[in-house]
Length: 151
Ligand code: ZN
Image (cartoon, rainbow, N blue to C red; front, side, top):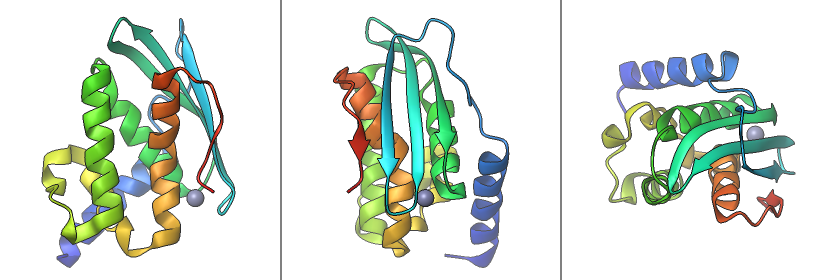
């Protein structure tokens, strides 16, 4: 990765971890799930206001490291007003980017701001931090309400 790009991505991550977007429980939220990453100590709750198949509003609460917060923040920004199917598709692409890195068929540039997480695959411990919000989202969408753990 070019160093300018790396710097830019780092800035995006720092921005989202310091000023997380949608860091709240949306009014009228009707789904939620908890996720924990014991390895790092990240704990987040994802809240959804689901209307039919559409995520009308989404927010998160909790505490965690910069990567877990930035990933959750970018996720909420990316998924507002998206359908469940679109959310599932984005989950698959982000997961592939995080776990397969350059071997992934996903071009990070197509993921908007989430491309800032494209360097995380090099640090397996951090992959769990970055994917926590996404697994928690999936649980909230499934409506199982079962807590998610990365372990
Ligand atoms: Zn973490």
